[in-house]
Length: 81
Picture 1 (tube, rainbow, N blue to C red):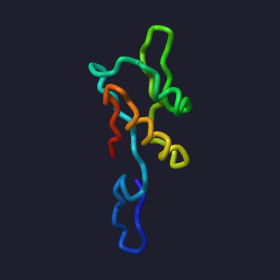
Picture 2: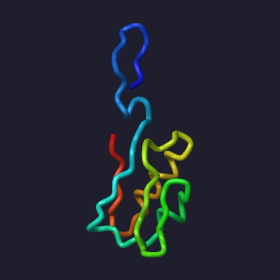
Picture 3: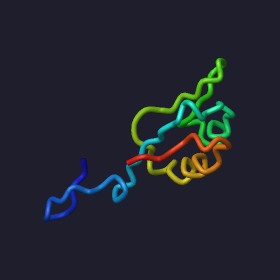
């Protein structure tokens, strides 16, 4: 967890930009739009299962991941703090 300056207040994930991707497995049809946009984070295997890199989305990929979430044709992806 990151802390702010002298007050020692814990920073929220939104303040630090730390977010994770979540998938609604019931809604996901593995169309691979997300994998096409951000292959560093999303992968669809030969059995049409979506795999998401574990952990927080790196800051340098955040904008592209947000685009992938918005572009999901089944609205199955979410960003979570």
